[in-house]
Length: 203
Ligand code: GLN
View (tube, rainbow, N blue to C red):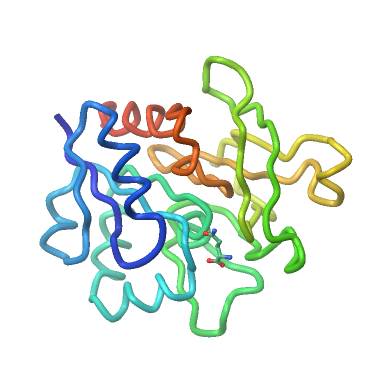
């Protein structure tokens, strides 16, 4: 079975490990470069991207991870993880670094500071079985994406979405998948993790 790591510096580590434990994979926390070297795929969890970016440098994981992603490591990033995967971050902290796993510009806290959380039913390309209940928590969105990036989902045109309607909130480039929402918090719906495990197996 493939070994799938969860970057375990901060954030929704436990929730992602639990979601992966329901798949036919070996799920492991990753904190050190030696652990990173052993995984076939990696999850970057939701949490706080500025803190995670800082800890990646402190733990000397930033460069090894950037290199593995450039070499084609399958990655699933949710929320803060999406921000970490961006080529460029808007409204980030001055010292915030990102890995460039997806050719996209991501805006942090894009739904507005007052909008703590927001839920919507999303149609996600490639997910069978109908809409996915997406939970957004101080979420980013994708401001723009390159032509090699497949848009998997946008915020639906519903009144609650306000100015966020139509914004890109899930993307895929090769074996790298990023969501602005938190699939790890949907205990009853593991379709995003299944899609990622499928991408890992394809490699
Ligand atoms: N606002 C957070 C950040 O900038 C992301 C929020 C989340 O992951 N729930 O990193």
